Image (cartoon, rainbow, N blue to C red; front, side, top):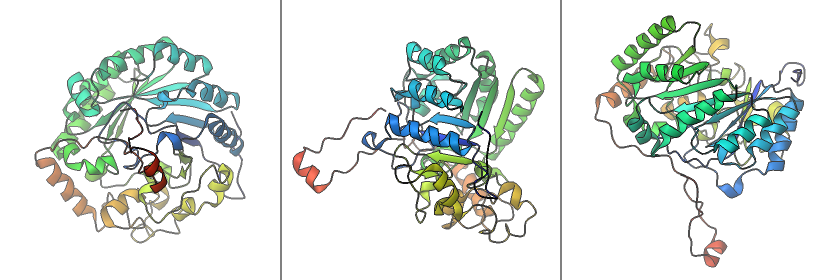
Length: 389
């Protein structure tokens, strides 16, 4: 592993970098963390550009690289990128839906030096899971993929995203993870920004369902202690204490989009007045140390009250900036998930109203074809470029 080193005198290097290799994905989950306007295939970084990113990450002192998307396995160079990451000393983690890779391709990834796999599931019930992802046959492919992971001797984490359609089966999802011989299962309530905020009414569970799910997780932790690690991510709309988003803005994490923009978190592009630098124009070290987007909410100097005077300000780091923007109109406001925020009761009211109403149909995640320029329109019939999913 690479020995972390300081950038300047005070700023330590990021611990991890997440590479969104592509926004293409066979699934169309209505809570996807990708932006509403996703990157087109033609804008994606090349193999050589991603390798340069990995070189720079290692030199910067990054310890872990997470290959994500979209669905990262639709990139035909994924095994090559995994091998390069291992060659420069990075711990490699694959975050996948498990539906797009063949056994032969997975074996290539494992042989290239893959260290860990995170596999998403939408439910323990196949019919509901496939409705959520809008992909027929997904569940069987996921279960088969999990077998390949464990047969290769790799540790497996199962990521289960919880919403009103599956929250009553949290126990069954934990049992499914156990049956797959997973080392860890993350029961993560939907985080409402981007696609999920667009689908708030279709996804928000009732408060009594949330409380029951906590009891289920607590009982499972006692029953399965020593057999599997169970993480639980509380829904912000029912919380009173905000989460330290990404362990604090610009403190430990970098997210790189398919087109090479470097973000402090997955949803940062929802903040319109920030400028995100690109690896095509600056080095990772320069971006980490000097990017105005990373500096915007790094540390505590930017905080308003009640954050500024709170004794937990260096624990939660002000919570989620993207959620603050989405619900208050300002990314610099206190996270409404905090019980001290003047917006907190409104947040809870939104959750209760959405969860009590009948669930509307999903607005599925889809890549919107790029609009051609005037010159391109004159040359083509306007047919959209085909994309996965």
